[in-house]
Image (cartoon, rainbow, N blue to C red; front, side, top):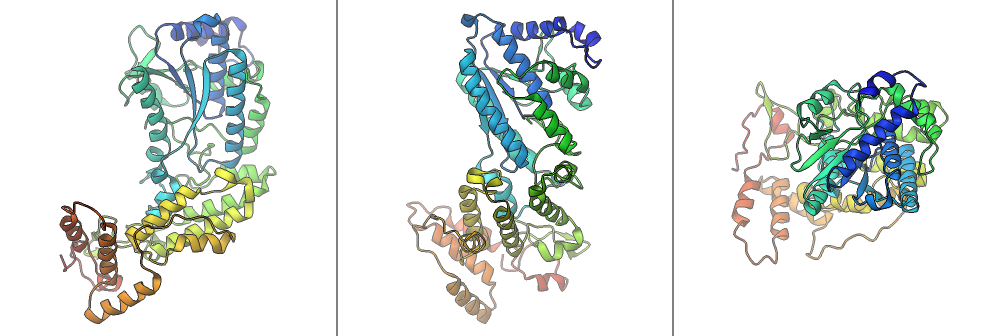
Length: 475
C-alpha cells in the first residue's frame, strides 16, 4: 500500500490505479489462506468504505475463487440511536439480497447482547449506576462480548478467522500502536489482541477522513444504498462513526459519535441534539430521558437514589461514614422503568427494539426475576407498571412454584417488627427457600443461607447513626 501514502490524502485525488492497488491487496489476502472473514460493519463511513472495497475486490475474482465465506456483522446494543438502527437494518437486508444476486459469499448478520447483559437489565434490573468514565461497564457487555461470541463461533467452526475492520491509524493513536505491536512480520495481518486464532486485517488503515469521504462519493454502493444518505446522516448529527468494538483498544463512542442513545459517558449527546435541531423533533423524548439518566451521576442525589449496601451485601464506609455507592434502590428502578415506558408510549413504533419498543419482553422478564429474587418484590411490579403505562397486558411467564403476594409481605413485615428482625432479611431467606423447593440435592442450602445472614441488614437510619462495622450483627 505504498502508493496509498502518496496519492490518498488529498480530496478528489483517489485515482483508479490507487483503488486497484487496494483491491488487489484485498484479493491477495483473501486468496492467501482458507480462513473465513468476519467484517465489522457499523453503518458508518469507515466500515462502509471497507465493505465496499472488499465487495468490489471479490467481485473481480472468478466465481470459482470466491470460496471463503465472508460474514458481515453489525453490533446492535439494543439502545442504538433510532435513526442508525433504521439505516443499518435496511442496509443489512440490501447486503444479503445483493450479495446473492452478485454470486458473492457474503452474508450479513446482526449481533446483540445476551438478555442478562443488556443495558436495561443491568440498570433497571440490577440497579447498576449508568455508565461513566470511572465505571464504563457497558462496552464489554453490550459490544465486545456479542461480537467476540460470533467470532469465536466461527473459530470453533473453521479453526481460525480473519477479522476485517474499518479502522484507520490516523483516527486513534492507541489503536495504531496496538496494530503495530501485533503486526505479523511480512504479512498484511495482525494478531488479535485478545482472541486466540483470530487475525485482524485493516485495508483502510492508511486512509484519512478525506480519503474515506472522497471514496464514498466517487464509488457507488454495490448493494444499492445511496452514500449521500450517509453524508446527510452525518451532517444532521454532526458526528463521527461508532465502530464495531472487539476489544478495549477500539475507540469509544464518546465525543459526539453515533452510538447508544442512552450514553452517559459524555456530558451531553451533541449528535442527538443536532438531529433534533435539524428537524427530527420526534427524538426529543429520547434526549430528555438520556439527560435524566445522566443527572443520576450527581453524587448529591446518591443518598436518595442509591443503596448503602452493595450487591455483595456489604456496606462501604469512608472515614467511618457509610457511602451510598451501591445499586439504585428498587424505588429508583421502578421510576426508571416507568420513565422508559413513557418514552416508548410517546414515540410509538419508532423505538429501537422488536415491534418498535424500547425494551423487549425477555428483558422485562429478566428484570422481573431480578427484582423478585434480589429485592423481594412480591408485589410483582413489572407487569403492573407495564400495564399502567402502556395499557397492555402481556402474556407473562407464570411461576411454577407458588409465590407470595404483597399482602403476605406486609404480614411478614409486621411479624418481623414485633420480634426486632429485619423484614428484608427474612423475605430474602423465604425467597431463597422457595427457589430451592423440589431440588433433589440441597447440599448448598446451608452455604446460601449463611451468605444471606452475613449480609449487612442494618437500616439506613442505623447506618447514619454512626455504625461503621461492615458485617451485620446477625452474622
